[in-house]
Amino acid sequence: MMATKSTPPMPIEEVDEAIARAFRELEWKDAREDLIRLGENSAEYLRAHVELEHTIPSPSKALDCRRQMWYKSHGTESDRGLPESWILAAMSGVVTEPIWHTILAHADPRLEVSPVSTLDLGYGVGTCDGELRKLPGKPLIELKRRTGWAFEFSRERGFQAEEENGVAQAQDYMKAAGRKWTLMLMSVADHSFYQNIMRKFKRQPGKKFPFYLVEWIEFNPDYSKRITERQYGTVELLNDDEPPAREQGIDNKLLDPDNGNWPCHTPDRVGGCPFWKKCTERGP
Ligand code: SF4
Image 1 (cartoon, rainbow, N blue to C red):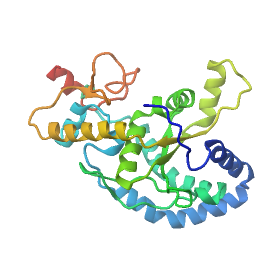
Image 2: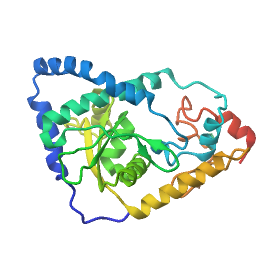
Image 3: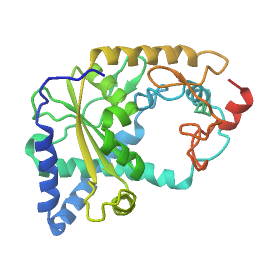
C-alpha cells in the first residue's frame, strides 16, 4: 500500500500514552468495581457479537484460502477437530473486547467506544467493534488478540505487513461506513510467557515488551477496490459445484498444502486447515 501523508484523528503516540497511563493509574480496587459494572453491561454486547450473522466470505477472513471457504460454505465435514485450546482462546478474545472498551474510556474521553449497526458490505454483512464518535471523522475501531509470535511479528513489522486480513477487514468496514480511519488495537494473550521468551530469544533480558499495540489504518480506495473484487470473485466461486483453486491473499497466490506451513498446517502440524486431508486427496 502507498504511504500516506494524511493526518490521523489523534496522534498515535497520544493514543498509546493515554492507554499506558490508564493502566498505570487504574487501581485494581477500582478496576474490580469496573469489572462488576462491565459484567452487568456487557451481556447485550456479547449477545450481539455471538448472534452476529457470519457470511462466507466473511470480512475478517477476506483473504483466506478460497478452497477452504468453499468447503466451509458447502457444510463439508471437517477432517479433524480444532485444538481444544483454540476454543478457549476464541472465547477469551470476545470477552476481552468489552474490557478494552472500559480501558479506552478511562484512557481519554475521546476514545470512548460506541456501537455501530451491522454494515451492508454488498457481498454480505459485517459488524465492526465500534466507533470513536468523539474524534473527528468518527473513526472505527478493530480489536485483535494474538498469541506471542503473531503479536511479536506485528510489533516488529506493523499491522500493514503482518495483519493483512485485519487490515482488509478494516478497509471493508470503512468503505461501508464511509470512514477514513480505523484504530487497530491488538493485545497479546499471554504477556508474561511472551515477554519471557522474547527476552531470551532477543537476548534483551531487561527489556519491557508491550502487551498491546495500536496503529491507525487509513482507508485506501485502490486497495479497498481490490478487496471488494476478490470478495465478489470468491462469492462466484463458492456457487460452483466443485471446489476452486487453492488461492490465498490479495494476489491469489497458490498454496501448497504439503509444505507444512500456515494456513494449511501450523509448523508443528497440530492445527491449521480442517480440510487438509480432502484438499490433498483432491489435488491442485
Ligand atoms: S489445505 Fe490449504 S490449500 Fe487446501 S483448502 Fe486448506 S487452506 Fe486451502
